[in-house]
Length: 166
Image (tube, rainbow, N blue to C red; front, side):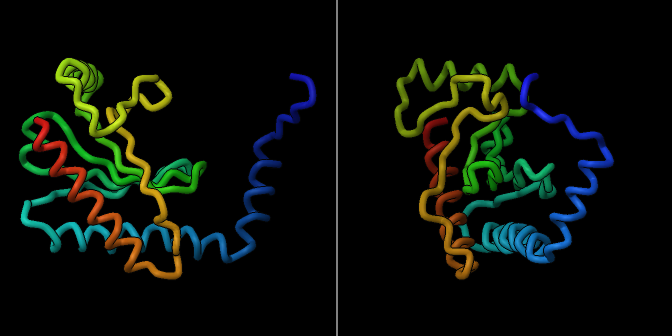
């Protein structure tokens, strides 16, 4: 490993402490969770379907996601994940399965029926997702309500499309 400096844990924690000394980091991180909190309310109140969701996953600064499902999705071993991907700094919606076998079955069904509405995840770069939909243009963090409304609309459309396919 030429040229790569491996830091010990104390060095890592010192660097982390230094980064956190800028209080804006915490404020920005909190904004992500506020967006997801508002999104949960919007999803609960804004659709004709009964949408349920599990606890928000805070992640390890790799992603934050909210698992969302409907009765139909749940009965078919599927769920939706609304994701904030930190490394790409974007919101995404994933179709996921309850396990890897179900994921393979759904990928095969999509291929067999030649459904082209969404691009499937065929590699192991994301073994949890069947479909990843990037939400383009959802980046005006000064307008939190607009972000929440746009994401909710995209989630509702995505769910409708998936349920129609099933």
